Structures are given as C-alpha cells and as structure tokens.
Length: 588
Image (cartoon, rainbow, N blue to C red; front, side, top):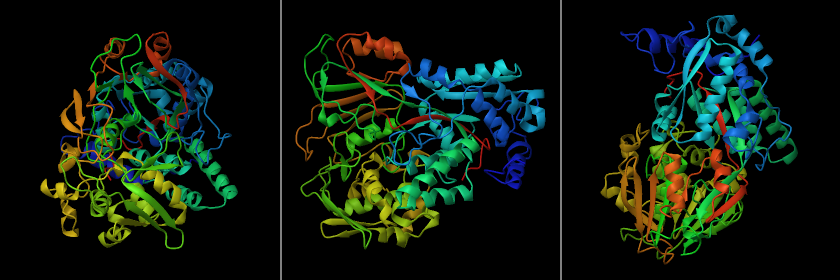
C-alpha cells in the first residue's frame, strides 16, 4: 500500500472540480498539461501525486550526462537537498541513478497501468539563457520518450521573472527547475524550503505533511550533535523515499572577469554572481581592451523582480538590493561564521534572555540625506513581517523571532511582532525564539533581504505607516509592484538607483553621501543579454567586465586570454526539478 502524502484525497477532488470542470467554461488551470486528463494527450493536475510516476522520472534522468554536458563536469550528484559543506550533511544518503529498467517498472505501475498504456503529454519550462537548465529538460524529455514513445514532453523557454511568477503565483508548471543557495549554511535551511509543508519550494509544489514537519523541527532544535545528525540522516532518507523532486547536482562554481578587475573573492553564502563589488577595483591592465573607465558592467540572463528588500528572494534582485541597501553586518571574507560590521558596530547575545543586541552605527545617511536611526532598523524588520509577501524570505524572521509554529503573519499577532524587535537607546534588540538560532540568525542578517530601509522615506511614498491599523493595506502583496518601494529604493549603500529599464538594464550611480568613503566605481550597469555569443563578445571586447557564463561554456572560456578566471569555487548550492503535486493550486 502506498503512503498517502502531500494533500488529502478530498482536497484533490475539490480542486479537480473547481479547477477543471465546473468553472462554466471548463477552463484548465494550465496551458502546459495538454488535455488535462490521462488520455495520452495530457496529464491531470494531480499527475505527480502518484509515487511511481515520481520514482519513474527519478530513474529516467541521466545524472552523469547532466553533470558532464550541462556542468562540464563541474558538479557532484547529491541524494537530497542537503549538500556537502553544510552542517548535517549525510555523505551516505541514498541517490537515484539512471536506470531504464527501474524507470520502466515504476512507470508501468503508475496510475494502475494507465500511464504506460495511454502515455502523457506536458511541457517543461526553463528560464531563457540558462543552458544547464535547458540541457536538463532535454535529457529528461529524451529519456522518457526512449522508454515509451507515448511519453511526450515538450520544452519551452520563458523570461526569469515570468518563471518566478509561475512558481509562486499561478503554479501552473507541471514541473519547475530552480537552484537554491543558503540563507544560512545549515541543513535546516535546505531541508525547510525543500521538504517542510510551509517551505518555499515544497509549499509551491504541494509537498509536505505533519510527521515530516515535526521531524524537521525536532532536528533543528536538538542541541546534541550525535542525535541531531541521526535525525538529519533520517530526513535525508525520507527525501529519497518520497521522491518529491529530482536532485540534479551540487555545482562547482567559476567566474570569468576581465583582467581589469581585481579584488574578487568568493563567499559560498553570497548570492550575487558578481560577489562584493565594494572590495573590487578596475585598472588598465591585460590584453582585453580597456573601456568604461570607472564603470562596472555586468551582463546576465535575467531581469530583477523588485528592489524592495522585504520582497526579493532571487539572486538577480539580490545583487541590486545589496548594492543599494546595507545590512547590520556581513560575512568577513570567505568565512560563513565570522562577520564584519556594517550598520551595526557591535553585537552580543544573551542566552538567558534570548536577546540579541546590536549597536547601530552613528553618522550614517541614506542616499536622500536622511539620517540612519535605530528606529529605521526596527521599522525595517517589522515592515517585512507585516508585509509577509507570499513565498518570500521573511519566514526566517518569523521562525527565528516568534517560534516554530509561526510561518507568516496569520500565525501570530502584531503585538508579538512589535515586541520581537525593540529600540533601546542606540541599540536594537531582537528576542529570539530559541538559543539554537544564535548563529543562524546572524547569518540570516547577512542576506540582502535584511537591507535597512528609511522609515521617513517610506512614509513619504505611502508605504506601511508602522501601525497595526495599516497592516491590511500591505499584507500579502500579490505582485512586486503592489508595494511602493518596488522600484524607488533608498538605502545607505555605496550606490543608488539611477534607472531600471525593465528587461534591459539597471543603472546605479555612486552614492556620494556613503558613510564608508569613496567607492571603486562611479556607475554599476547590469544588462540583460540572453544570447550567450553576445555576452562572450562583450567580455572579450572589454564592453563588459563580467558576464554570466553557463557551465556548458566553461571549457570554451578557459581557452580565452585576458581574463581572470576563478575556478573550483566551493558552491553550497543545489539545483533540482520539483514535481508539482497539484498543478494550478492550491494558492495558499
């Protein structure tokens, strides 16, 4: 008897009625599922709730070919979302392998034999310009067809913001493919988004159940390293047993700058592809032509989604927010456990009271001339929790400050949020929900989502006014543009926004009031250039200082002269396919 997971049969039936047949016109919830039925011309919305479908797909994927072709060998297969280098990693976690016989066995059992008899059709999507993800789609589609020519999967590319909106909004993709980098470098931060019923990806795909949620909470709160590791081993085994997705690989990163750029260093928790620009410099050296003096030009494949720190949860947006806004502290060099002060000059934790106290730097101005105060810091974190955008990063604040049962605003009260972050003179005091959050909380504060915003400025653009009565106006925004700070940010960072031309480029100018002194670039320009050959030509001509290089092009770029190449960078990220258990819903 198969284990019942994810969502009750009653909910599946209700969704099937409301999404497929009873809306008057019978409109399907997705254009990517063909007929919407298991009739050979499509798939039903609950296609992936069948365990044999999921396991059949896991065995149908060729992991070695993916690593060789999509990553140029620069990756290692993993059996669960918990990758090597994280606390709690199990090196003995079981992994699926490419096995046509086992794939066929499971797919013949799927849906009581109907899948094998009728076949299926659906569309796999990936973000434009991401060649490794395109390759992954092609491998899966080709292998499924080779197993049974009635298994027909088409492939379609869409812009990155569109893909993101489909993942957390319409949820109409049968499967989605995305990578994850650490919010905090701990097994919990990969297990929660991949496996908890309230997790970022698992929530989008409809995976998770109470027993597993309890296991995840118990493991994180266990302070005995031996028993805690045993609990994490069991959770990683559970991911293999449930097969909610196809874990592709843990990549080994590279970066290709022109020789004009110096000062890059790699921190595995830094989400910006470019790294920390403030520590870099540009000079007229090397064989590549020297252009754009005083300007850093980066060409990438995806546009940003928002410039509001409380909204952003993708690397493209995070880079821009990280240049405009600053956090209280940040990682020191390559370390993930040692920090340098930014807007906080010092900090301390009291294990008895669970209070984390941060002293706020004086003499700092926002780029509009307003002075930074502790009240801005308090407002920043309370605003984020009172906005609580769906599928955003703020679940971490709720968990760290308000407890394991608090995942969003509806799980708590305004009074509790208000009490969790308080101003005390020139200090801001956070009260944690448990001492086990001491280190992870400081790591969370390094994320670009923790960039401090200007309370006074937010009031001037009619953002949240800081009171309980105004929460309803800003709670759970459906779109990035629903929030006033979306495209008009003000921060204390080294640069400030000049223009954001959507789908084309973001231009930042130097913040001349920056408290840290001079900055290495007068302008930072980030361009969206989807075509690889155009990005490569820009780099070699000196028109760009850094471009996004897909792993499929590593060997090609290693032969080029005039570049600073950083190889074998120890990524803590992981890429995966996720099976959507209920295509088109539920929306909560």
